[in-house]
Image (cartoon, rainbow over all chains, first blue to last red):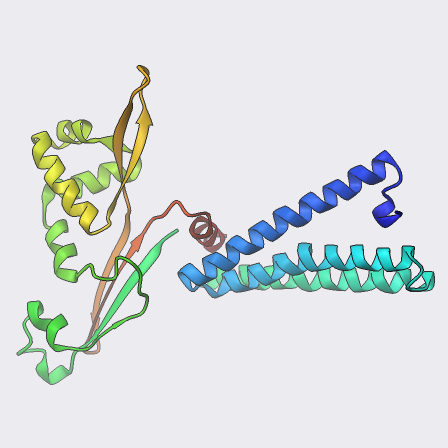
Length: 107
Length: 150
C-alpha cells in the first residue's frame, strides 16, 4: 500500500497522525453538533459542519483519492486534481468555522 | 454550558391590572421555548427559592467551589438540618448538583455545586418573559459556552 506513503516508518507516523487528527476533529464536530441540539446555538451548526469538512471529509477524500490512484483506478495525472479538491474542502471547512466564530461573537 | 429554560407569557395590556402575578401562568398562554426535564420549574418556585437569604448564600458560595453540607452550615451560620432542607428544595428545582470529594482517610464527602448561572426576568410591551441558564458538565454545553466567548 502506498496510501499516505505508508511504506516507511515516517510515512506510517504521518498516516497515524492524520488519522488521529481526523478522529479528534470529528469528535469536536460531533460535540458541536450536540451543542447545537442541546442549546439551539446557530454558531454550533457551522462549527460542526466546518470540523466535519476540515477533518472528516478532506481526510476521507485524500485517503480514497490516493487509494484510487495507487490502485491505478484513477490515472496519476489526476493526483493534482485530488489535491485541489481536498484543499477546497479544507478551505470551505475553515470558512464555515470562521463564519461560526462571527455568529458566536455577534450573539 | 447551560440549559436554558425560557418561558414567554403573553399578557394582554387590558388584563394586566386584573391579572395577579400568581395567576399569570394559569390564565395566560405559556410557550416553552425549550422543553427538558426541568421544564416544570415554575417562576413562583424560583422566586420563592431566591427569596431565602440562606439559599442565595448557598448558591453564591457553591458557584465558586463545591462545598459540603457542614461547610455550608458553617458558612451560613445555620444548622445542618436547615442546610439539608434547602439543598432538597434546590435539588427539586435542579439548581444544585451533587458531587463526591475524596478525603484523605479514603472516604468521600458529598459536596454541592450551584447550577444557577443566570435568572432573567423581563416585562416589556405587555409580555413577561423569564429564563434560567443552568450550568452543566456536558462537553457539548461547555464547547457552546466557550465558543460564544471568543
